[in-house]
Structures are given as structure tokens and as C-alpha cells.
Amino acid sequence: MRGSTMLSRKFLRRTAIAGACLAGFAALSIAALWVLDRAFPPPLPAKLTVSTEVQDRDGQLLRAFATPDGYWRLETRLDQVDRQFVDMLVTYEDKRFWDHRGVDILALCRAAGQLVTSGHIVSGGSTLSMQLARLIEPRDSRSLGSKLKQMLRAIQIERRLSKQEILERYLTLAPYGGNLEGVRAASLAYFGKEPKRLTVSEAAMLVALPQLPERRRPDRNLDIAHAARDRVLTRMVSAGLLGEREAARAAIDDVSGLRRKLPALAAHASYAMLPRAVHGKPLQLTIRKSVQQGLEQVASDAARKLGPKLSVAMVMADARTGDILGEVGSADFFDASRSGWIDMTRVVRSPGSTLKPFIYGLAFEQGLVAQEMIIEDSPAD
Image (cartoon, rainbow, N blue to C red; front, side, top):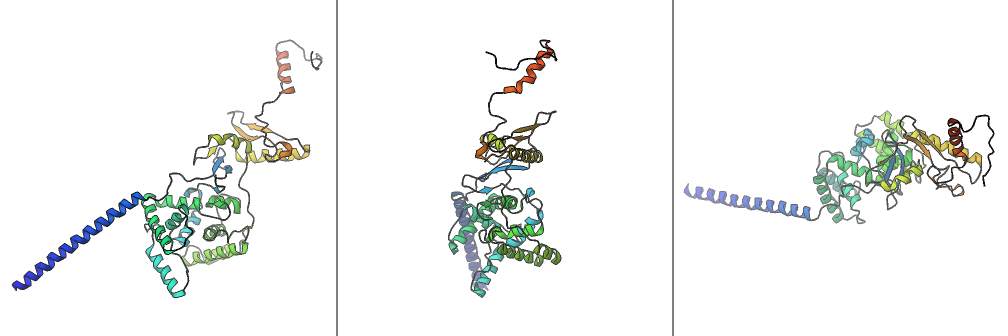
């Protein structure tokens, strides 16, 4: 009995020592990870480098300027994007996005199992956080080491950003082919509208493109883009996010293969405001987009009727407030034959006969001339 008690005490003592060692090792590991996390933080600037936007009085995009590296990259907030698109994106790319802390162990195990059974990569197991890590810190290598670094970066990112911030950064940086980055630039270029209201077909297309943005570009490989969109629709049906009929209707919706120009209104007013741009903040004018579009069309039509080397300028203001609602400096900013870069609403020039009505009116008011008096309108020596 006594020997048994001594053995029991030794076992408890050894267990306690082992537990203390494990706890100490765990504490040291956590401390080491904390130090490494602080020593090698992820490259997360407070503000992303994005295109400077010029907006109208209601916040609608009038014009954007490419980033210094030549990309159309429009800052994106979740409230600017169709909610169904966000749900489809998360379902397709990272269905446990709202629950994991950067790495989805189940997805990685599934990807590893598929690799073993099929002999090739079927799915990557990357979370949206890992994809963001790759976007902010690009790596050419697709080795296991690179994947491990992505995982570590994803964990670091999750410690620093909220889920909403991670999604917004992904939606701003995701590649969409050529020099298009982010869902807003892609939606404007491929569909001619902001992504706030998307059809099911358009949403599925925007989910599919970032995986292989060059290969799936609708403006170059429309059939491949449609096939990728259809795979997204099929997955959404399996996930219960779409009904079969809704997905079938979306699959027969032909997406245009055109790449449109981004909005390019109010050129002169926009360039005049550009020196005041603050990083990450849009420039806002008192112009109303619908008025500006109408004036620019009128100016273009009038210039064609006037003939070559002549241009048109006009300004529309609110008589009550003085706000400029529309401003056209020339018929075409890029038309060199009409010196379109010259803003005729601001350039200093001789007023000519413009002042005559005011001069005559003042003369009538002061009694210097009568309305029936004939005045010789010729240069005076």
C-alpha cells in the first residue's frame, strides 16, 4: 500500500513538472509569435493607393484618374456593392469567412485530400484573408513555403482588420483583367454601371473573374468568361443561395464582351480641382451629373455644326444659390484641332462686344443717351 502511494506521488509530481514545462513552452511560443508579429507586420497601409475620384453634388462618379502605376482602382465600401454579390463571393470563395481567423483548416484538409486522390490541385483552400495577403504582398512562387507565408500573413491581417475591412480591401484590390482592379472599376468597365445593383448573371461574372482575370476577361474571351460564370451559378444552386430557375435565367443572360470607358465627364473642372486632391478622398463638385451629360452632348453637337477649329463653352448655374450645375470648357477636351484642352470658361480674353449691353444700359440709366439715338459704333482714334 505504501509503495503504491509513493508511485502515485511520483506520477503526480512528474505530471505536474511535465505540465509546467508544456505551459512554459506554450507561453514562450506565444511570446515569440507576438514578438515576430510585431517585428514583421503585414504591409497594411492605413489607406490604399486608389484612383482619385471626382464626384457630383450627389456623390455620383463624374471622372476618375488612374493610379500612379496606371491602374483603375476605385476604393470600395460594402454599402456600394450589391449584397447578393457579396453573399455569392463569400459562398464561392470562403464559406466560413465570418467564422475563421484567417485560415480555414477544413478547407485546407479538403484541398489536400483532393490533391492526394486526384493527383492535381482541384481547389486551393485559400481564404479571402489569404487572398488579400497575396494581393498586398505578391509572390510569383506557388510553393508550399509561399502558401505557409500567406497563412501567417492572413492570421496577422485578421488580428489587425475587421471582417468588413478585409472584404472592402479585397473588393478594392481584386484583379479583373488588364489594368482593372476592384469590383467597382470592373463593373463600370464591363457593365457600364456601379456594382450597387447587379443582375444575378453580372454578380456571378464578377465572382468568377478574379481567379483567372486575364484568361476570363469578357472583352477578350467571352465564352470562357460565360463558362466561369455558369460554374459560379451552379455552385450557388448547390449552396442553396439561388434557385434552379433563377440560375437558369442568369445563365442565358448574355454579358457584353465590350470594355467600356470609365465615366469621363467635366474634364476641365476635374483637372482644375486635381491639385486639391487628398489621398483616399474623392473630390466633390457642385455639378449635377445629368446636367453635365446634357451640356456636353449639346456642346458636341453644336461644335460639329459649326465646323472644324471652332469650339463651344457653356456654364449653367443655379440662379438662387450660384452653384455651378454644369460646366463645359470646350466641345472635346482631347480634340487638338479645336484646342480642346483650353477651358474657355476660365481663360482670360478680350470681352469684345460682350460689355456693350451693359455700357448702353448704364448710359440709358444716367440719361446720357436716348433709346432712339444713333451712335456710331466704330473705333475711336
